[in-house]
Image (cartoon, rainbow, N blue to C red; front, side, top):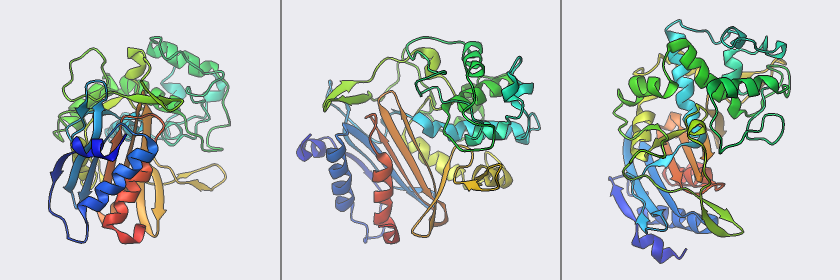
Length: 356
């Protein structure tokens, strides 16, 4: 798409920031990335010291109707939603309703012998060995079919483990699906309802909620894929698989700014709980892997970075939190398979030159 078309539909909410940051240079960078990655629409927020210093929409939220993206545009979370699931689990841990070292077999009846040493911590850190349902193989599922929690659990139980619990790190969406089911078993609430009551409402995150194709949701964007360089609408996913705890949320950059601000406080969890969330997992060998509970843990040019990407149903998202610098960049896109992390961390370099 030509740069002039993107500029035509830009909507800007921009607050003052030091003059060394040139808005037009950032816009040029974002637009160049969108062009090279063929991204139809993108919403971005830059948060510094808990305040939004730049929030802007680029391109189109709906290509067929020619609707522009704004900071109020709603995108799907993909796996950025995992950090919310991890928070729900830690809330139950703080309440004493479960322990990170609990064996999940005590919550899942008739679990196979291979599950006897899998803990809640293993599910949170992707070290359980349970296969990822997005991989083709034993645990492959039909994304157009509705499944009950019991059916999803049974499919996970029937598949062999990729490795003994704690031996390796391997990303598993299935683990977070099981965490959502576990939250319901322990709390008596659907995980999305628990998050609504204990996270979204208290933080005034007005747009954040579980995905629903049937509800009327103002400012909802459309998701897209590229097929042989041709833009296509996202494929259908059944309602039950759009409510699982591995990343099935709607939100805006404004809501994620509120979320980011809360993570520096004890509004949701105690500092000790956040410390555990952001501690690299220790494997059975004693080695660590740079993943906590729903977050990747990195360092970029000496700056501590807590981040995560997400991708689902025609959307790809990213949040980068340079926590010691109190700088966060959120990038939400409506194209499957693109690289919003490249955009988020590139934009961060305009505010922290050492990152370039």
